[in-house]
Image (cartoon, rainbow, N blue to C red; front, top):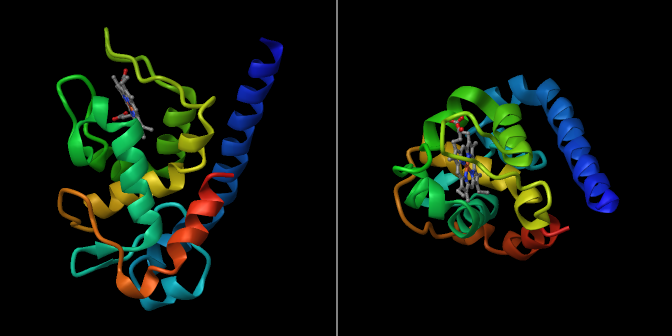
Length: 167
Ligand code: HEC
């Protein structure tokens, strides 16, 4: 019991540190997103590339994790359901810190509807940046519904990003 509490707390701390570090760079990310420069620096949460309806490996990974862990409540392709809200606009408006924080801590604001905490789920926790990228791609990026394909020239990064995100 104490151990799982400890794990939960350290995960929340990891998120908090991640978030505070990323706030500093949020402005430059917003400016660079979608430009050619974006390819020459490391991936950051919310980054995505869309070419002819195909996406980069991180955004694709975000689609997979969303579909496995979130779709049952939040509906296919992030669109929302009668039980839980759409995440597409929410991700855009509230930003990374709010998005990541809600997934780590859960949320119980609407009566009778509970968003569970994923703090004990390393698969989801490690992939929050990718889910965020997928949501932004669906919103401002105009990515269509359904399972996207990975951009051919970025295929070789798929294994790499899978490895990083399951740590
Ligand atoms: C068991 C059902 C369920 C699952 C599974 C679930 N959610 Fe939720 N989620 C909810 C409900 C219900 C709310 C609204 C809670 C409230 O506002 O009181 C919510 C709210 C949220 C919010 C805040 C939305 C807003 O507009 O404030 C985010 C972000 C979110 N969920 C992300 C996720 C992600 C990402 C996953 C998958 C890793 C996920 N959720 C899985 C039920 C779920």
